[in-house]
Length: 219
Length: 219
Image (spheres, rainbow over the protein chains, first blue to last red):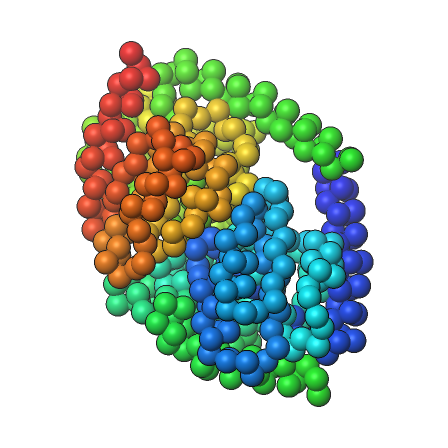
């Protein structure tokens, strides 16, 4: 039973650091969103479109999680947004300690909204609290209709759900009706946004919601 | 450094069981393929189309890996193929011990080809040898062009690569040229099949290759 005990220890240590992060974010009135999805669901593209569409209305920061590369951080940097890259060196999720270190490296302060883009993975990231306010789960219409029931933990924990690649809906067998039915069973409360990171469809509604959440955090 | 040592132990124990599996598969002249991908890349759909298209030319078995459900195993069973479900209860990959137990439950013997469909995840499954002959990695055109460079381990370990959802290529920004260039850097030897699990395009070429590999294993 060594494995189980060790996992408890790792999660216990993570909880302490997540609490530390949450306190720091809270004293800065900073809304923090942990962005999670399968590889290739379009997290970074959604961030790019979100930055463009917000057009300076919020002071943004991004922490990018990736196994080895800084490709996503480079894309965010091109948009003029403050970004720090975490390379997990093969680890399949971010943890609160990595976010603690990365946040200390994030230039400047007085941010309104911090996105933490997790490693592309629907399993492991869901188990680690980073100290965020909200977990946002991105899923795309091309991933099939069984993801909500097959990966229930991450969808249950989601504070908001973004269905991406809505532009490809006509070319897939994805059923919006079944998607909503499955979510109603597992997580009936999380708002769901239908967007296309490629065309920008639905991004303004998503941004309106972000603006409201940032205000609510400050209130 | 407890964590590192434990991981070594887990991997060491896994290696022993993988060797055991490999010996059993070998004495039965059974070709075993470990099928891996992101969630929603289309592994199960490709298996369905493969079964239909092989039309009894090979005696097939399937071991299905999933966190909690048996949705994929039910789909395979409908095709009249012998299947055993492994539920990892939240674990993010299969290991050799799970496959050992599942194989003992697989009805009948004298199989030609065994597919092991791993948990949908591009990170963790790549680290665990199951005793298979080949790792097959499925990636789809809708997942973007950065997956090969962002998840190098799984693509490096692949003995064969299947690019799925080729029917959606015209509606995406996916570049076949860049995909081939990235693979040339990381894994220039693995054959690449372009298929559509939805339309069946490319499945016959993939099946011709499977038939040749089964023959080669017996020779």
